Image (cartoon, rainbow, N blue to C red):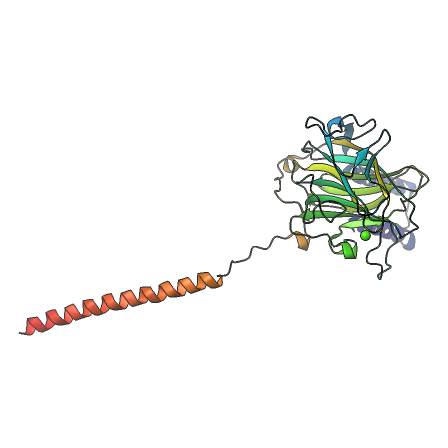
Length: 353
Ligand SMILES: [Ca+2]
């Protein structure tokens, strides 16, 4: 999406300079000037891209070994749900067994505007490729601890969902290789369509061969000045690969972090090793500082997030009563009118005699 546009424009710029031999330079000074200008421009755009100064691990929002903040007690930071269980090495959302659901949810609402979430996860099982399922989801949502059909969480959720989908439900399309990681922003009315692997509501995503991997598998979500970036490290290269990049993402504050998973006829072990949240310190212009908070999650300039203000039409019952009272009103007016007319006529007749 945005990333693709960015990349293609970069490629276009490069090919433009190389393919236009009319740009000969008369002197080295001219060339140097151009080089300096280009360097300043490119360093500026890099700075724009990543002008957070420092990041801090926020322990209260993080889940990591030995999972001390995780228990069923109400004073704990994280809470287990369904079949989820904790071991010294991971939080197992579901075991490799059919029809299981499990989740882990933070109890503390997140009020940071700019943050980065690094998730280490592990999906593994006995099933052959594409005979396993269904994957896991990472959440930052208004509601927490809900059961449902979206990787073990409720549908029509409000907030952010990142799906590591390991089973191709819409297998007729063959347009992508699974596991496939995608992002969706829910506003309470949008539905995740399992049969189509969430294609209608997907904001971005990529293939990530993260199941039964020999090495550690990670994903990274960053919200930075309303720009949402998803990156993956699943190929054992210890480097982030860009997966999705969406600008104009507006998320209300006070949502909850969580992870959930569900198995059906097919299964896998779905484990969370860690979820680490970092605060990003950001320089903001006064205008950016004053930016209004939204109440419902949205993406700017995206049709499915435009809330239509519809003139409410009259219901059948409303119409009936309006009609009835109008008729009655007219009737009363007519009677009063006739009475007044009768009186007037009588007075007139009396005057003549
Ligand atoms: Ca699926």
